[in-house]
Image (cartoon, rainbow, N blue to C red):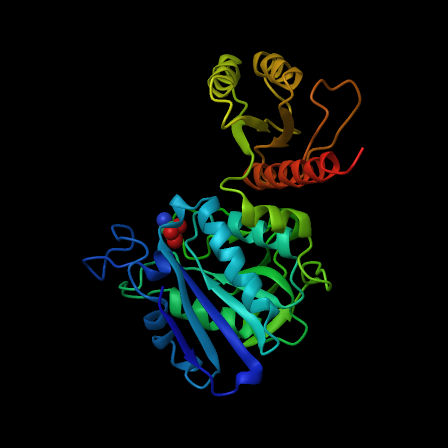
Length: 342
Ligand code: ASP
């Protein structure tokens, strides 16, 4: 896609990557905040709409132009490659990514888990389209740049409605309000106030030596898909047959195996007895099963005598990505071990 470079201060370049979303959305009426089409306005135009960015040395690049509800591994792979490329440039100090809000937390988690960048990668978004009477995108983009240029900033963070969230904790909590994100028990990492960052806690952990998951990073480049991990929810009347149907479908398609299941349990990761029995059967077939919780706050605390012992403190959608990356790294290590001379 289109690249634009404005290298006024090439030693201090900020890269802005566009991926679509509501921030780039257009609606037929200015009064319409929901009946819009996401991913319509190019990143160059979004940047041009924020006059405070005029004098900065920017590289602006449209990576994709999608509604983030349709996010998937192929886009992550492309985005990861572009982010990794720009992070390695000595003249680049930070990266800002515009993204749809629907899967923002998943992309942020994916990038932070794989890269743990020592430079800031700041993701931002909007809940209202660019054509709205009061669009929130321009202010969010301005704030994201403030965070990206903040001395000491590092790691993947999300900036929305004046709050800075860590990629690990952030979750979309509201369907249409502009302050749509929350960091649960951890709380936001900080706030952007009148162009200044007020920090409450540390930036996400960095890996100074380059991509954290080097093995996964190399694997990601070479694979077409992440190992498939399904996400199920436990609820009243939950039925184990959904697991059995999944297992048998994937057994019949060995070219695309079911490698893991994350179950969003009730409360402290508890699972309906019928679903639990079926998940134990899946586990016996070699499918990794991880329990997490449907609750927005707290984490799953384990105790003895649990049939499904593997748990995650991440949200269900992030636990799914973590398990897929884990399985990918595991398969890479197994491949390496198998190729060693006996
Ligand atoms: N569906 C849009 C997206 O995720 C929603 C948004 O950006 O607010 O791309």
